[in-house]
Length: 314
Image (tube, rainbow, N blue to C red):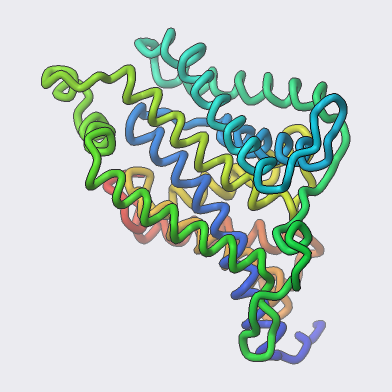
């Protein structure tokens, strides 16, 4: 039996805590978009990962001035990437989901898979090379470290990710509690038939909901792009499964649960990568320790609470 290496606070506790929160923020944003569409349309959107990929890819192309595109300042490139994600999401709702909205939910789920495959093909035509978007610290030409925690440097990107998640969480809270459109989305998620009866414009609300899902995915995409190679289909293959797990963990009907589930998935991944040598079941594996840890953690939570941590159903 191979003995575990010595435990250090820095390597086995503080670093995975920072990395897990940073990565979990993006998972939480994607999970929130998935929950938002499930609550409003009862659809599992398998194109959510590609909305994020499009954002990262478009931001990268404008940041580098790829092909015939102009080279834009970093902030404008980020905005362009997020807008591209929103446009793809709204286009999906208008051109694919709305014409088939009266069909079974299974048909709509398969349609989102078709949209994802189409987007992967378009991405391959537009930018067939892997690449990384510049980080905030590189773009601003400042220190890569924001602060230190127990003498461990906290990357500026991790602080930015957490800050974005907090701002969007507060924004979502205000939107759903203080605006008529937010109230309409919640009303449709509770009872679509009653919402139609009282005159809520279901079609317009559906378009706004998909636009919000695209916005969340776009922000997640530009947060992930500096750390994960942006290639056609990259975020669907590497992130979407974890985002679904985050949404189910939090509860598929709970918007706050998506944030919590995303952070939990990020932390489980990070600690599994850092501390797998101390866990008998994980240290026997050659690879994929974090994937196994996420799966086991999710299954244990759902065995105890099938609805997820905050949801009414899962």
